[in-house]
Image 1: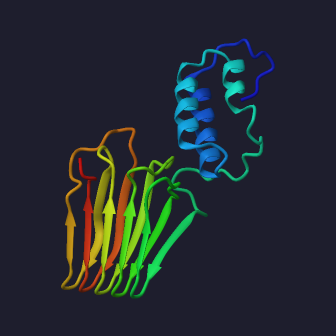
Image 2 (image 1 turned 60 degrees about the horizontal axis):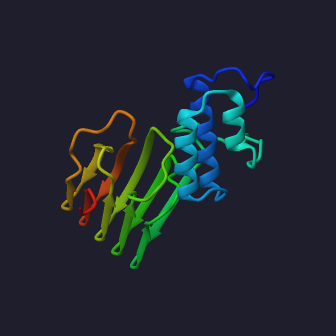
Length: 186
């Protein structure tokens, strides 16, 4: 965050820019999840440009790698024929995920993930295997563009979403397998 007079008051938009820079830095492995949470809290109470500048002073200034939420360029592919593939614990959520299994299984757990996108597209192809998706409470899940053959699609993540939480849009095909979307266990 740059401004010639760092003593001037920062706006909500200025804080949002810094929060996005911090999320990108965490996604690149420059900040731990704890550091990210701490700095976001500090950003939300920052009063001046100098306060904001201090929160990103140890991070690279190049933001050319930023991809706008829902933007093109970020794709995570989780594919298996007969084995098991999973993404869980701490990880950074891209704007687009492809999950494909023939007779194996794919597990995608968003519970401890960092997601800076407003919308995430999950493109599934499930033959005879299974795909399990776990989303935090507050997320909205849409399965409006999903086709099935004789397989099963179960969405147990149906609570109303928070306005500030991501939307997971699930598209694709389920053949003879199973797609299950749920919240984490309490």
